[in-house]
Amino acid sequence: MQLSGSITALATPFTPDGALDRPAWQRLLDLQLEAGSAGVVVAGSTGEAPALTEAEYDTLLAHAVERVAGRMPVLAGTGQSNTAKTVQATRRAAQLGADGALVVTPPYVRPTQAGLLAHYRAVADEGGLPVVLYNVPTRTGCDLLPETVGVLSLHPQIVGIKEARPEAERMDALLAFRRDGFAVLSGDDPTALRSLLAGADGVISVASNVAPRAFARLCALAAAGAAEDAAEFDQRLHALYRFLGVEPNPIPVKALLALNGIGHGGLRLPLQPLSSAHAAEAERLHADLRQLEERCRVPAA
Image 1 (cartoon, rainbow, N blue to C red):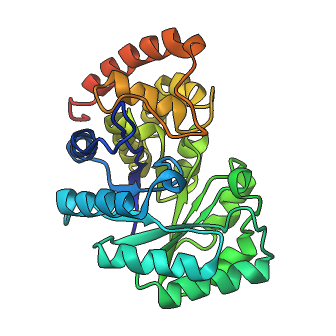
Image 2: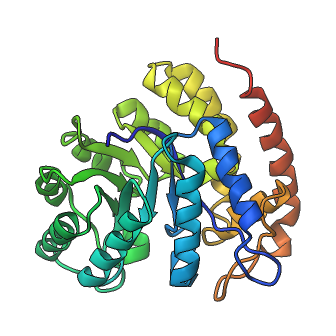
């Protein structure tokens, strides 16, 4: 599996009473298909994975596989704080039909680099799915270093990395390991274009939940070497990048999805809906994004 382009880390819509909103989930999947996204992630951090029951996780993943099977890869978030639990979750995702597993570094426990090597090798050997490494130190408390990634990239079942650190130096170090069979993906929307132009294969994006056509176009332009045109789209998205950081992810993106008629913006405790202080900005941004997405319906020249 060679991953590239705009891959969306999907939010999980809930009904007003807190249940899964299955019709909204279907609309979100269909929106990604229609927009030309290159893949989706189910039940990652944006999908509020820790707040989902096992039955809800199964429902989301099975529905996603059924809806988009064969048209784009479906990655399942399976990372846990314990290796045996991660292997178990990855096997379950394989049974449900996922194409690959997005495996975050074990949160909270802060393993050493040797521990991370052993962890990912065990998941790749025993989980039954191709593995995409996921490094996001601000959430997990540990950093998967480039030299460790280089060793792991040689494993035949480890097919890529989502790197959420924003520094150019980190991305440049990882790009040395990029090859057929191992993709380097940005996990940081504000610096994704810089990474793409430096040679990254794609981006696993939060913003593409609400701007999927723009992100698909951005990635296509960058892949074609059209840096100036890609920069124009990126500039139009700067307000979205900023807004998505006003409160913890996925609070802002779920508010924007609700304005798009997908879900109701609700989250599960301890997360709360977007505060009223940001409501007017959300409305303005929603209107701007609708115009940008409509513009992207027109094929690029």
